[in-house]
Length: 430
Image (tube, rainbow, N blue to C red; front, side):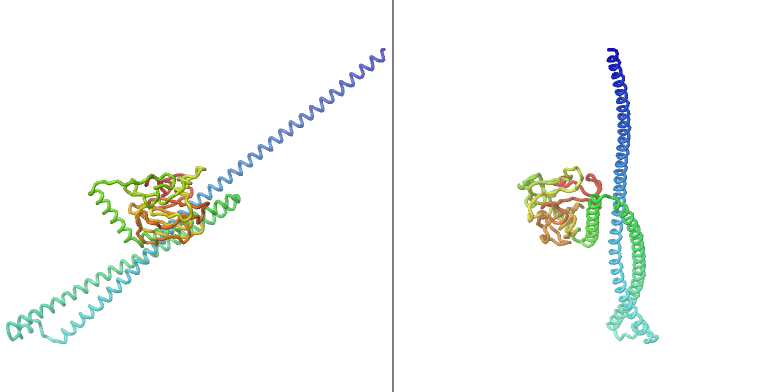
């Protein structure tokens, strides 16, 4: 009995010892796991911090790229202005040189004529106007000689006055020409300086772009192409505004006459629908400017508006996109002068830009290649067909991209709302 009890007690002791050992082992395992968990949490936090840092670096890199984009756009715009100025100065210099040559030719002729008169006078010896008069045989002859002498004297005086005038005008023309040439040289030097600054900015930008992700780089390429195309169009427009100044003046005079007639003739109204979606009578061909406060008409018969200034994501688009089948006629929103017509494989694709008498411009993009029916410098009437809608350029489906811009007509990819650049809400002008 005693042995049995001892065995039981011994077993209990062994069990207790084993249990304590297991508890200790388990405790150690828990501690190890807790330590590992702590380590893992630290690693996770470190990873998160690294991720946030990488994201921040990407964001900062993108900010640097955006800032450099703005600098580049500014340089390109300034260079575009200088190109226009240089073109105008070259034209002025050519005109001034032609005028100067003409004046010099006239001066040389009159100078030669005066020299011939002086030679003739010298060869006549001491004969004076008085001698001519006294040699008259009769009163009639005296009157005739007096008239002849007066005409000769007046002609000589007029000739001398003309020579002096031509001399003065030649000197003034030379001074103007020299000023224009100096201005041209300064403009070329300024352009060269801006071009160097532009190259530095582009090189700096390339460094940052290489750090962007592949997706960001693709997006940046799209931004660069759109910005480049916009700048090219703006440069074309600046030249066109100088080239078609006569047409623009004619357009303004026509608008002023129309306004004066409307104000003196009393008010009249005509039918016309709103610019809301649908293919009803909101077409560009049927609306009357009298029914619209801004004077513009909706430029196309459309199925629906796919973008009304802002994408569904909230990103600023700066235009109204009218979804319409390819080949749908596109109308001039108002009377105007066509500034530029161009077909691009990128950005705006086939497009037309029209300048209006109120200083606004309307941009029509993504037309069907080869469908444009107007030419630069042409005066178009409201509702006139200018092209057909399509899916050219950077487009995801057939539609008309319609923009309204005010002076100075600039564009900024980073714009977040109307007013950040020259684009204004088209809906305000229907």
